[in-house]
Length: 150
Ligand code: FES
Image (cartoon, rainbow, N blue to C red):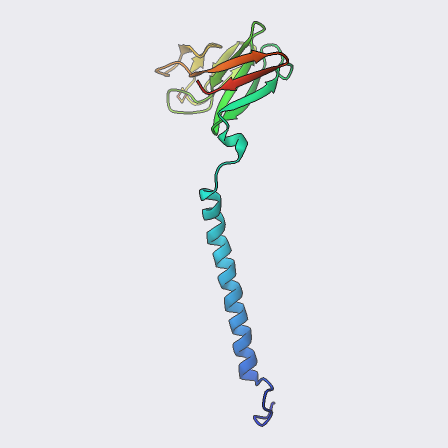
């Protein structure tokens, strides 16, 4: 037990008060971080690859009739090597927005949600999709290809 005559020395009550203040200020910092981090992530610009309106790929990166998934402005795009060139097709199904997959063996895009099927140029072959998949611009340059939003 401390004596009140000890001027300048903290009393047990002052120690508890100081500890409580430290605890509360630490909690306030923690709450600010929990709230502030998602807000900061939301307002900051998208990383460059998510915001890109063009993507460049080496021309030997995609095998014959294989597909590579890329993102343009955060939207999925499948790039297929047809042997005669490349097709870049939006992977967002025109029915209800599911992400289509490339079936190399059938040379078709297939939507796993309701069975929509599309040819390599995005035309509807079957299923409930009302419109073709969107085609994007592909520029073939020496040693590389560039896919752009049309
Ligand atoms: S969302 Fe693709 S067929 Fe329904």
